Every structure is written in C-alpha cells, then in structure tokens.
Image 1 (cartoon, helix red, strand yellow):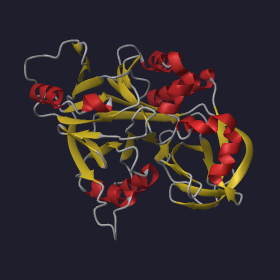
Image 2: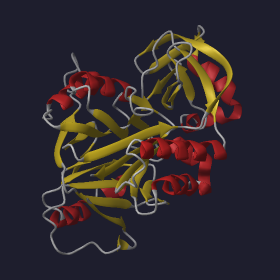
Image 3: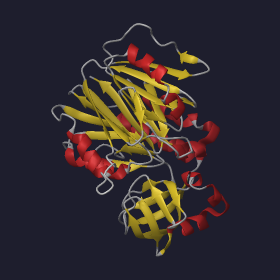
Image 4: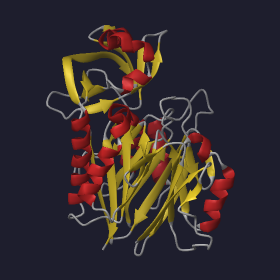
Length: 384
C-alpha cells in the first residue's frame, strides 16, 4: 500500500510538486478543500490527468488536515495505491425534485447501498452534503441494506462557520445534495475506527417533548430555541455559530452513551432548532461544554481505539474527521489534537482529513454505526 500526499493553494501552487508522469495504478484519490478551491476545475483536471483510473472523491471543509497541520483556503490531495484491495465507488444525488414525495435521507442511504456489489465487501467510506442530509437517517438506510459484517465510516462536508453551502466531489464534479461512497473489497485489508469527543454535560437533563426527525421544537414543554437562548445568554446573538460551542448531549434512554448533536439551523418563526442528526421525541438531552485538555484526550482516545482494532500495527493511512466545533474551542492550538493522534499511530502513518459538520462511525468496533457531532473520528487502513 502506497500513499502520496500534496496540498494546493492558489498563492503557492502544489506543495510538494504534483508528479508529472501519469500513475495508472492509483485506485483512490481523496480531495478535501475549501469550497472555492474545490470548484477550481483546472486544478481538478490536473489531478484527474495524473491519476486517470482512480476514484476521485472529496468534499468541502471547515479546515483541511495535512499530517499534523490544519490548513485553510487550500486543497489537500491524498492518492492511495493498494496492493491487495479492490475498490468500487458510487454516488447519488438526493432526489428532492418531486415535491409530493421527496426522497428521505434514509431512502437515499438504502439506494446508495444497493448500488454497491456486496461480494467481498468489507468497509464503506461515506462523504455527504453537510446541510441537506440527515446523517442519522442516512446511516440507518445504509445499515439496513448492507451486510451486517460491513462497517461504515465517513463524514459530512463543511463550510467553515458560514453554514451556507457544502459540496461533495465525485469524479471531477462538485455539487450540493450529493452522497458518495467508496467500497473496499478483499480479505487482506485491515480497517480500524474509533470516535470520541471529550465533551462533558452540564445543567439539568431535559426531555424532548416535541420533535420531528432532526428538528427540535420543545424541551419539557417549552420552546427549544427560547430555552437554548436562556442558557447561551449574550452568546445567543451569534447563533447558529455559537451552537458549535454548546452542543446537546442526546440520550435515547437512561444509561445510554451520550450522542452529541450540533445546531446548524435556527428558526425564529417556529422557535425550532435543526441538527445534522435525529433528535427523537422522548429522548433526554443536556447542554455540553469542553476544555482544551478534554478534547485533546478525546482525540488520543479515538486514535487508540482505531489503533487497537488493527492490532496496534502502524497504519499506512489514517482519515481524520473532526468537528468544526472542536476547532473553535481549540483555536490556535488545534494542531495539538492531531499531534496527539500521531503520537499513537506513529509518524510513518499518512494522516489526511477535514473539519466537518458531522462524523459517521461506531464509537468502537462491535457497536452500531452512528452519526456524531463534536467528535474526532478516525479510520485507519493497512494491508497484510
């Protein structure tokens, strides 16, 4: 398994220089970049010309991960050549053209799963629009159709703190409302994964008394937005961006592990909050907060889980997907969470990824896949 990595900025060009000779054997090229750069067709054509047979897939971000660096206004390109693994890619657009019966994210997940061949399939990596896709329902739809032995990881595209437009790249074309999947086939590939946050709940636990899918209307019979604004105080004027600093911890039943949910739409008219994943009626929620040390420890914990899943072998490739809210808390020291991950995986592991609007992964091997917010989610790849 061989991995090449480059980054592009308009002011600096390719660093290091993109190879001029055509590489016919590379099977996968991951591209993570700011929305503006992701729309740069000239640069995308360069990548396609160098790696003509590769699956070219990526998304917009709230920051690009290049090793232990977090880049902005850039495009990070990671090309992977496997020795014993085959790949199949698939892409669909969320079918919302029919206003009478628009396609749900669950149905889209089912349709995407059915487009993959199941024979020999071991893992599916997903990238999707971060604003129009309900990540929880997408995961449920995928899991319903895929064989139980197939694991799923991935993430939701980002757009900084603008929440304006998130894009998915597929085969040189970028668009909204898109979901892309890469299926990995073969028995010599080892995939590890782990997802941890580092956020702590505070304040009273409240019951969701009115919600629909990923839209929250009432908590304990009170307006969800009104109650949330009370907690935020002066910071409420900065919603929805301020919500990245104070997500909700969701517990389906007493004793369950908390899932973190981040607000990305605030509706003043009906006083609702919209999240990237489901907030089921009857569930319990609490506000959450985090410290610098807690977030770094969470990233290290996720790396440890993913490392142990591949028997502590240093992976050739690690895809890191960390939530934009974590970046806002860590600020100028955000790279410390990446350095913590590298200290576990080893310096020989090539690390790529992005800051996202949501992360898709089981917490650890052996448990169901979920949509997370505010976590560091790591997928590690190696061949034996």
